[in-house]
Image 1 (cartoon, rainbow, N blue to C red):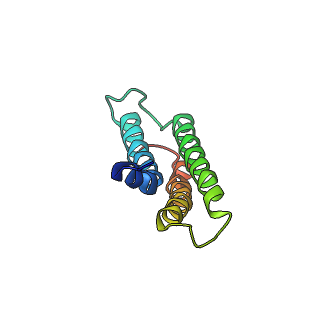
Image 2: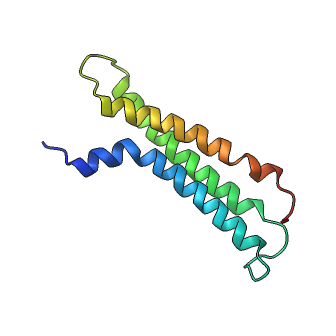
Length: 110
C-alpha cells in the first residue's frame, strides 16, 4: 500500500505542530485574560493553561509511544521517517514543558 506525501509529512511534523499550537494558544489565552475587555480580567487563570498544557503533553507522549514501537526493533529497515517521528515527539514534549514554565511563575497581568 502506498503512503502519500502529505501523510508522511504530517507523521514527521505533527509533534512540532502540537508544540506550535500550544505556544500560540497559550499566548492568545493569556492575552485574552489580561486585556481590559477580556473574558476574564485580572490575573490569568492557570486552570485553562494547565489543561491545554496537559493535553499537548499527552498528545506528544502518545505520538512518542507510537513511534517507540517502530524503533523497538532497531534493524536496518527502520526508515528516517520513523526516527524523525520519534525524535520530534521527544523534542516537542520537552519544548511544551519548557514553554509552560512561565505558567507557574506569572502571578498577575502586567
